[in-house]
Every structure is written in C-alpha cells, then in structure tokens.
Length: 134
View 1 (cartoon, one colour):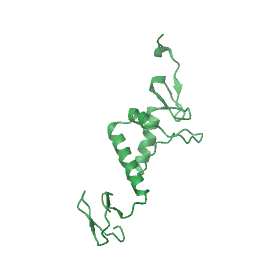
View 2 (view 1 turned 90 degrees about the horizontal axis):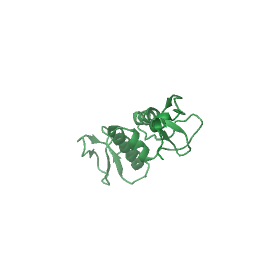
View 3 (view 1 turned 90 degrees about the vertical axis):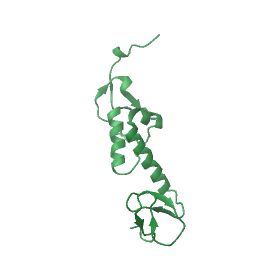
View 4 (view 1 turned 135 degrees about the horizontal axis):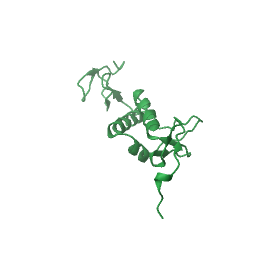
C-alpha cells in the first residue's frame, strides 16, 4: 500500500512555525521537525562566525545535532563544503597539535617544528611570525 502524500496534513516547523509538507521536513535526533530553510540558516549563521553549527535551532533547548546525511540533503554543495572546511579547521585547532601554525592572512594550518621566524605560508605565500602570530 502506497501513501498519498498530497493528502497529508502539513507539519509545523519547530523553529519558524510555518507549515510544510512532510516531504520537505527534516527531523533532529530528539524528534523536532524543521524546514530546510531553518536548518540552512542555522548553518549559514555558524559559517559567518567560523563555527560549524549543526545544532537543532528548536527554541526548547534541544541539544541534538543534524546528521551529515541530513545536512547533505539540505545544504548546497558550496555551503556543505564551507561547513566541512570550518569543522575540519576547528577540529585541528582544538587538537593541541605541537607546532601547529596558522597563517595570519588566510588561516592556513601547517605543522612546522622549526622555531626560526617567519613561517612562509604554502597557500598564500605570506609570512607569519611564529612568536606572535602576526
């Protein structure tokens, strides 16, 4: 037996409170239904502040994160790529890797155990002082 989705009642997004067909809704791990636009917006706001925010924006304190599968369905390839880059960059910076250096201009990360200054970025060719980071 197949379901007729045309006759399904719309579901309210727990973030913007607009109603959408079930096929256009996504569910966090705690069961909140959210629309594509709200999920995309929370990720874009995170990207603008250099965080990889994939947390459910539901107002009642949900601590759930969206799976990579949901993000890949919701986000454009460009936004997904930027999200992945920021997530990887932040993970590296938080890993306490010895001699991890960051370019002052493009934020490129490199492991460089040579203590002599400056570091020359292989990405943008800018020089960064290893002592002060500028």
